[in-house]
Amino acid sequence: MVVRVLASLVCLMLCAPASLCQSSKVENQLQQLQQAAEQALDRGDSAAAIAIAQRGLKLRHNWKEGLWTLGWALFQTKQYGPARDTFVNLVRLDESKGASWLLLGLCEFQARDYGMALDDLLRGRSLGIPTSLGITSQVRYSTAVALLLSQRYDRAVQFFEEAAHEKEHTDAILLAWGLAAMRMPVEPQHAQDLFTPPELAMLHSIGEAMFRAASHELKDTDNIYNDLFRQYPSTIKLHDSYGFLLLRLGNIGEAEPQFRAELEVDPNSVLARLGLGYVALEQDRANDAIKLGREATELEPGSSSTHLLLGKALLAESEKNEAVAELELARDLDPANMLVHFLLARAYGSVKRNSDAEHERSEFLRLKQMNDVPALPR
Image (cartoon, rainbow, N blue to C red; front, side, top):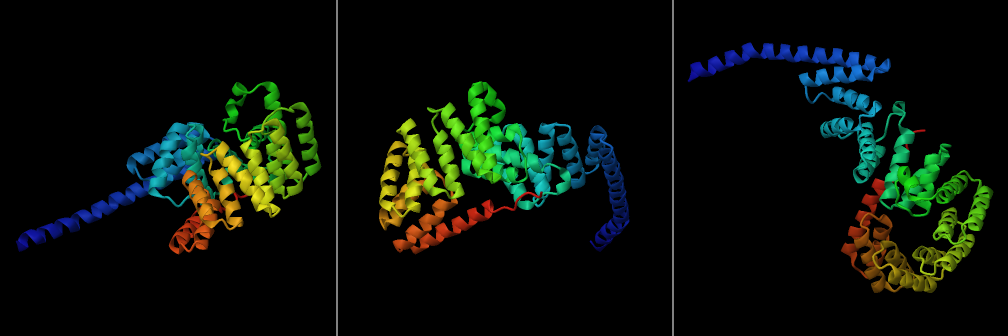
């Protein structure tokens, strides 16, 4: 037995140097290949960089530097499918790099997998991105459009406003912004197949008005909308879009007439009732907000927004138990809405359901942390 153990030890001692030598040799090869791939990228030869990275990955399949180089070169040559597969492998090895998640999200966006793209773009944005990649504008636009298509219109608008602050003023951005303002979950690249030329012109003008507002050119915004009202007097949601813009700007008194004008165009407008409800709450008219909230929930019972308005109005009027019921409905319809959790925590606290209140506060903070991500670098 002792002889066998000694023999095994001798074998290990003899084999270890050979194994270390082989590992060192592979490491040196990978370093040389990485240097060659970087040189190929520097001279704009993406095809050579791809071939070099693939050669290195045959030596070590989990070579992170090689996966990054391969994915980046594939992305630059618009080979989004293979690039996506490469970045999937890379984030499995290392979840800490924001650039990997962002490029994965951009590849998913190109594949029209908008749900996955949105998750990965937001995750990458929260981790940060090197400015040297030059994809900041692309990430911002893709995130905004993914939010638009997921019907998170207000969040999409925030990204378009960020683009405006960076003086990004393209037809694509203005069209997508117009779609978000009008709450139309339409892929901008297919808008020409769905809308007439006058409708496309209207959406573009709405985006222009939003851009002017974000750039503090409010007189121009007002002029654009007045022209739109004259050209498209019977278009639904047009007055709503301006009303909600005015609410975001804090112009409560000017927003109210817009929502009332919308009701003249569309007496069943849920959006107009929501807008008027929030105007009423801002003016301490909770009873009016309750009436509007009830009308909105009757018209659209499957909307989280209608139950949220009604719950908030009931809470303001100390109708605690009914407020809890409405806010619970809003939460169940839209679990990702952090405002619902915030208000529900207050409502639970008012009826002494302390453990439920604490749970909702925790959920609010979790969602807030996810949404309070740093802006992309300028």
